[in-house]
Length: 237
Ligand SMILES: *Cc1c(COP(=O)(O)O)cnc(C)c1O
Image 1 (cartoon, helix red, strand yellow):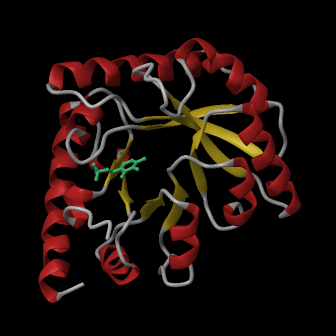
Image 2 (image 1 turned 90 degrees about the vertical axis):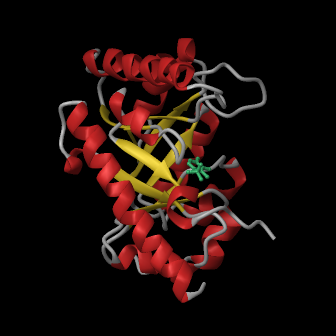
């Protein structure tokens, strides 16, 4: 972290907020209707805390080990910490007491473990169900034809509460293709909402990353997950 990179983050943060406000307005909503979550993988805690000091109030980590190694260092007083990566069932117990939302639930087995571990801590964990909207092999997320059944099964568990849907669409070489996936997700989100399933609230539709968060908002997303556009290109070394 350098002075330079902190001022870049500040510049990027303002720009992203303006673009979100603009896309929100174009879709008949307001800036405050959209949640900006910063995807913080590979970013050091001081840089994350700098973004939080600018007003960022949602961050998401991808890896359990990385979350645990930074956990004591984040300034979370006014910030929600979420888990957005693929979560192995045997690692649930390491994070369940530390996160406000798990965005990436795609199996009953994982949901059952979140339920079990949450009950041990006397808490209810909010989750999103991850949808594999592009039907890609080797990718996390449930296929749309299995979505409603999975949601209904999770809704019967204690200590876990379904709050919406999340997706990572396939990498697309043009905006029209990505819009098609985003629109399909929004339709699923509305269809499930209208079924008014017991113990299910469809309040969050999490989609859109650095390259396409404006398109996602135009298609109805109310949470976008932005990493490199805020913090710069990731350095995995
Ligand atoms: C890394 C990541 C993002 C952000 O990616 P960028 O393209 O850097 O904005 C969003 N969602 C998930 C699940 C991620 O892992």
